[in-house]
Image (cartoon, rainbow, N blue to C red):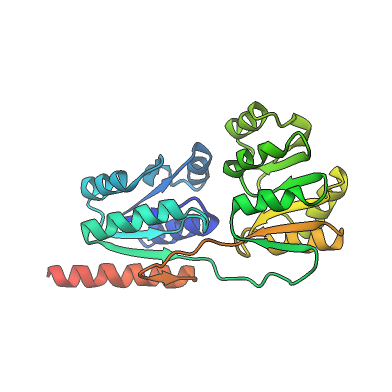
Length: 261
C-alpha cells in the first residue's frame, strides 16, 4: 500500500497517476477543501482528511500496511515532512519526497529576501502602508500586530473557515480576497492597482505556486516585494519530476513483488 501526502497540485497528479496504474494507495489532506479536490477527481474513496503528527503517521502505517510513502506536501510544510520522515525511519519503510524545482528570484532593489515569517513582518514595518499577503491563512496571524499601523490585505483560499478566521482577527471583509490560484501576472497587477498596494509578501513556493507572476506584477507596478526563502530539510530520496516519482514507486513495488515470489 502506498501513502501519498498531498495538498498540492503535484500531489493530486501523483495520486491520479498512481491510481490510474491500478496501484493500491491512500492519500491524506489536511483540510476539507483539500478533500473536495479529490472528490472532484472521483478519488474520494482513497482520501483521508486530518492532520497527523509522527505518532499519527506511525499508526496509519501500521494499520493500513503502508510500505511506501510519497511526500508531496507544500515546500513550507516542513513540520509535516519531518514527522513523515521520522515515522518512515521508525517503521523502516521507504520515503520518497517530491520537491518543486528551484526558480531564480530576480535581483532588484524592490525585492527584499528574508529567511522566515518573523523577518517578513519586521521588514514590512519599514515599507509601505498597504500590505498584500499571499502567504496563506496560517501566516496571517503573524502580521496582525501590524494592523493598527498598516492596512492588511489577504489573499486566501475560498474556504469559509479561513474567511471567518481573518474576520475574527480583525481583517475587514473588504480586505479579504478569497480566490483559488494560481494567478496570472495581469490579474495580480489588476489586484495591486485595485487596492493601491505598496508592499507584497510571498513565499518562494516554486513555479506552480505562481511566484514569478506575482513578483513580475509587483515589479511592473513599482511595489516592494518581500520574498520568504524556502526552508531547508535533508531528504533521503528526492525528485522534482512527477514522472520520476511514479516510475520509482512502480519499480519499488515491482521489486517487492519479485522478492515475495
